[in-house]
Every structure is written in structure tokens, then in C-alpha cells.
Amino acid sequence: MTETISKGAANQTGAVINKDAYAEAKDFLPLNGLDHVEFWVGNARQAAAYYRALWGFTPIAYAGLETGVRDRASYVLRQNDITLVVTAPLTPEGEIAEHVRKHGDGVKDIAFSVDDAASAWRETTDRGARSVMEPRELDGGEDGTLRRSAVATYGEVRHSFVDRRDYHGVFAPGYRKIKKPARAAGGMSLLEIDHCVGNVELGDMNRFVDYYRDVFGFAQLIHYDDKVIHTEYSALMSKVMTNGNGRIKFPINEPATGKKKSQIQEFLDWYLDSGTQHIALRTEDIVGTISRLRENGVEFLGLPHAYYETLANRVGDVGVPIETLEALGIEADRDEEGYLLQIFTRPIQDRPTFFFEIIERHGSRGFGVGNFKALFEAIELEQARRGNL
Image (cartoon, rainbow, N blue to C red):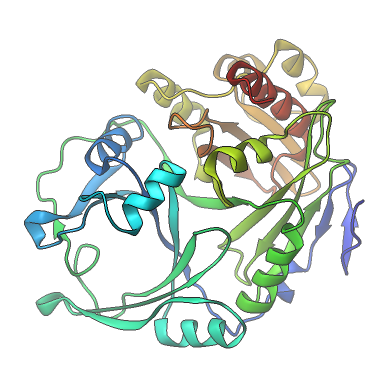
């Protein structure tokens, strides 16, 4: 059932939106934004090449045997305000190798930029967070000192707190700058991480909603229940948590009872734990960006022609001809604050787990609730092809 949120209101879709969420978020944990997202993968060199050649990310730093690191290889990639790190084990033992063996490629760290890593760690652990890295100072020599700490969240994902005020190196001590990186693919306009979506087991959504509220001071922005997000066969429930400045948004999903398995349950079955299902990358040129990504070989979910036949009546003018949206597979949605354009990739690895969303916002702070039914039906077609529906 839809939950009533203080000072919130249900829009025409049935979603409950808390328009005072940013004001309600507590400021005891100032977060400047996302510092980086780290993936633990089976082959970091190949993953870095994938993000460079297909997605237009530039490799800027490397750590591995050549820099004195003996257990892992890491590549740091950047495009505008998005920083991704791909890390692979160099030996069959250790936590990275075990993580990849169990989960396949997946998100390990969603790191926050902070002014004081020790204070952030103290505030969150005092409120019940489990520490995975006590505050430490990493000496970068002439580049200065990097300070960081970390706490756990759902599954094996962690949140690092990174303080770069006194550090001037390329990424972190132990990394060296890649002076002549291979040329990255051009034509993309990926600007920043819009939101990161976590999938948790049935019954755990509210537990982690409470966790982000009580430990991080986040507030609930939107609630979608299984009456909003459903098809004939499957459903899920989702609550979106945000921090006070609105720079960080974390939808948290759990499966709901349906005739067949939802996409959330498929993720859990193959990832073998709660984890980060997808990351949305914001653009201001979704048409040009998706055109280039498709040319480079990135695969996206498709929607039937019937979706686009009624789209203009539902969303009005969104600045892009309906024929262009259909040709590229881009979805559109409108709410009281504006509209958005979005599209989802197919899973980017062999397991049906992690994928990306590309989103262009024009006022709307929502997540495309008007597209949920069509999107879920497209996902169910993919699930059926994999034998997982």
C-alpha cells in the first residue's frame, strides 16, 4: 500500500512525493557530492578499455604492480564530474577475488566527497553504521595528504568518505598519472551521476530507508509502491532517499509478490546478495549521446511502437520529435515540475545484474514513473529470453 509521508502528496501516478525532503534532511553529515564509484571486476584493463572506447571515459590514473601495489590493479576513469574506478584482483586469494567470484563484476564503493573524513566516520558510526575503515591519512609526498574512512551499507557495498582538501595528486597515493592515455571515444555528454539504485531483499527496504535516515541524515523524497510499479507478472517497491543539498539520491528497491519473478529478484538471484543495480548518468544531450553510444556498440532496452503512439498525448512537447525518440529507444515522462528523457542499457556484463541509465532532466526531479509499466514489460521480455522470468 502507498505510505503516507509527512508533508507529501500523491501525484496522478500514485507515487508519493515529499516536496520538503531536502529541508528535512539533517546537516550533521555535510556531503559535497559523490567522489567516485568503484567497481570490483574480473579484468580491470579490459573494463577500462570498455569505458574508454564505448563510453568516452578518459583513463587518468593507474595503480598496480608498477606502482608497488601487489594484490590488485586499478584504473581511474573520468568524464566531466563522473569518476569511475575499476579494480581487479592480481591473485586468486583475497576479498577482491572472492567478491568477483561470488557476484561477478559489481559496485563495491560509492564514495562521498567530504570536508572531514574523520568527522563523517564518527558521526555515522555513533549512529549505528558498521565501520569498514577507520579514519586514516594517506601520505602522498609532494602531492599532500589524502584522508579517508568508510562504513558499510546494503550487501557488501561500502561508502567511503574522501577528504581531498590537502591532496593535489591525480587520484590517491599509490596511483600514478596516465600521461598519454589512449584516445577516448568522443561525442558523449555525460556530466555527473544523477542517482545510484540499490536492490535489497524482500522486507529490507524500510530497514535501509531507516538506515539512511538515522545514520546519514537523509530524507525520503519519493515512495513508489507495488500498485505503481507493476505489470501483469511482476512488481516492486521503491523509496528514494536524498541528502540535504539534493546532490545525492539513492532509490532503494525490494521485490514485491507477483505471478513471476521481478527484475529485482532476478538481480538478487544472480548477484547473490543485495547490491547496486544501476547508476544513472545525467546528460544535457541525450539524443547525441545515445546516438554515439549505439554507434559504439552499447546495447539498450527497446520499447514497442505502441508506447510511442500515445507518448505525445501523455507528455506533450519534450523538445525532441517522437520519431527521434522511437528511433533511439528514448523514453519521456512529465510531472508537475517538468519533464525528463531517459533510457536504460541492457546489463553490461554476462550476469543479468548491473546496468546504466542515461537521463536528461528539464525540471523534473522524478524517476520516470509514467514509463515504469512499459519499461518493466521490456525488461520482462529480456528476462524471458534468459529463462529467468
